[in-house]
Image (cartoon, rainbow, N blue to C red; front, side, top):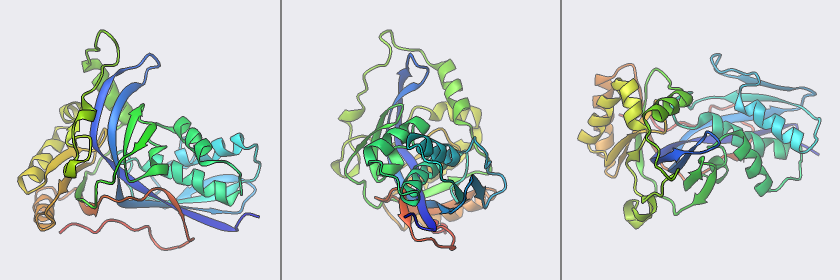
Length: 307
C-alpha cells in the first residue's frame, strides 16, 4: 500500500569538465563530461489524488506538460500501465537556465518518488532507462557524486568522489537556453572527417591523482561570445584564489573551486560588491544524489551564502 505522502530531494550539479566531441547522425552532440553533485537542493512532494498535477513555489516555473517532473511521472505511469495519480508540489531553489541541472534532477527525484509512492516494482536499471529517455543529464542524478557522462551525457560511469571541494557559485539574474548555446556551437563547429573524434580526455587527472582533468568547457567560448558579462566573474574567481573557474554546462551559472577555504569568503565579498545583481552561494561537492526524504514542510537546504 502506498503512503499518503512521500517526498524526495534533488541536488544541483556542475560540470567540472565538458568536451563536445562532434555532432552525431541523430542530431545530438557526443560529449564527455565530469559531473559533480553539489550541496544545493530542490525538493518535491507527492500526495494522494486521482489526477496527476503539479504545483510549484515559484510562479515563473511552468507546471504543465513541458515540465520534466510531469514528463517523468507520465513516463513511469505509462511504462507500468499505472492509472493512479498524484498531486505533486515542487519547491525550487536551483535556478532555471543556469546550467546546474535542476530540471533533470527534479525528474530523477520524481522517478524515485513515484516508484515508492505508487508501490511500483521496477528495477533501478529500468528506472535509469526511463531517465535517459527524459533527458541527457537525468540518469546522472540517480547516481550522483562524481561521475563521467558520455554519449549524449546519459551514459554514466561513477568515479572516485572528488572530495568535499569548496565551490563558490555565481548565479546571474538571467538564464541561458541550452538549445541556443548548442545551436551557436554547431554553427562554429568544423566536424572531423571521420565524425566524432577520439578524445584525450581520459588521459588527464583530477586533483588528488583521480582521472579526468577539470577546468575545460568546450561551450564556454560560445557562451562568453553571446553573454560577455560572464567573463569578468570568471577572471575575478581565479584572481581571488580559485584553482579554476568555469561556466557550468551551457551557463548561465559560473563557479570557482577552492582548495583554501579561507580564500572563498574574500572572493565572495569582492564579487558581491562588484556584481550586486548576482547571487553568490558558498557550497561544496557532495557524494549525494536524488533520494527519498521525510515529508517536511521545511525549505530545502541551500549552500551557505558566501561571505
